[in-house]
Amino acid sequence: MSFSDILASIDKNAITTRCNNTTIDDVKVVLKKERVEIADLPVLLSLAAEECLEELAQKSLTLTRRHFGNVVSLFTPFYISNYCENRCVYCSFASQRSIIRKQLTFDQIHREATVISDSGIRHILVLTGESPKKTDFSYIHESLTIIRNYFPAVAIEMYPLAEKEYGALINSALIDSLTIYQETYNKDRYESLHQRGPKANFAYRLDTPDRACRSQIRSITIGALLGLDDFRHEAMSVALHAQYIQKMYPSVELSLSFPRLCPQEGDFTPEHIVSDQQLVQLVTAFRLLFPSCGITMSTRESQSFRTGIMPLGVTKISAGVSTAVGGHSTDPSTTQFEIADHRSVKEMQTDLLSQGFQPVMHDWSQRMSVI
Ligand code: SF4
Figure 1 (tube, rainbow, N blue to C red):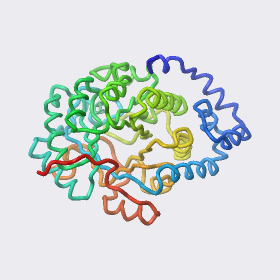
Figure 2: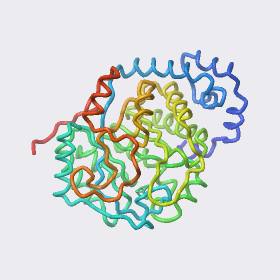
Figure 3: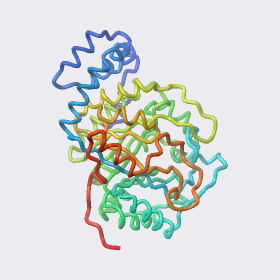
Figure 4: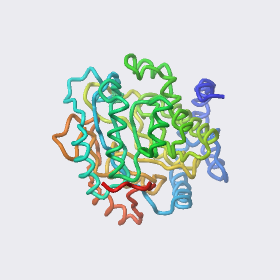
């Protein structure tokens, strides 16, 4: 069964009903379970579970320490282009916006990589907008060939590629990880938010993790952009997608991320605001469901929120972040979104150490050529 078949079978009304009818006793029963199941997720995300958040957090903390110790992996995003043919209403890079467009030359990529590398970061997330005309596969391949010389762990968050393109990047050891958000798993909502451009193809994006996994990607991060639809429905879709990937591709390391919509260029206001408390509920519920999955917390969240949630399930965190193209080394372009945590890599390391964590600069190393 493909994941799109599984997604189509989700009964959203049943999730809502289960959430609404859950009692505190139901939550306590789930919290006592040795192994939490996906069917338990609506219970953990219910209003009643908000009353049990302390117990949920304690259980999540224990599981996180059991599976990850005190280790937290640091990474930073590396934007190489903000040209985009899509019109995502929630993004500053959308094609209809009059922003400063920029695409790094290969010399500029060397410079940006040098500055980021000098900060101590060894794990990089390379991003572009979706413009196969400007940032075609050969540009991506060449950019990653340069970047790979500076960083032993390279993840990409780019427009969905064809299976053979993922294969080419993975077989050349240019990337080891992929981050791909479905944005929203609600197909109708997705189609209304992405009416034009290549991103309008819901099914192609949904199948992206499969294409990368079939190409033997080492690790993959999935999630939904919180704010676009009911977070409980999105959570169930993410959980089923995660379970599907684990069953289909057991050798692939799976991570999860829960980005919340931030202020950006334009006038989009999320209809489905997720509160801080709900985000904590979400992260801790997923830790119970997926004890050994990495969980990333982005700089969309404030320093105080990230500090508070760190012990409760988070295993990867960005630092020294700029969401502008060439933001570390050149006159930066427009940012993709406003970040809320501006700590440098050094500051993040210091703060993590003071919280009792062991910050590591990468979670994976490939042999690097000497440049
Ligand atoms: S979210 Fe991605 S695809 Fe959509 S406008 Fe922004 S950069 Fe382009």
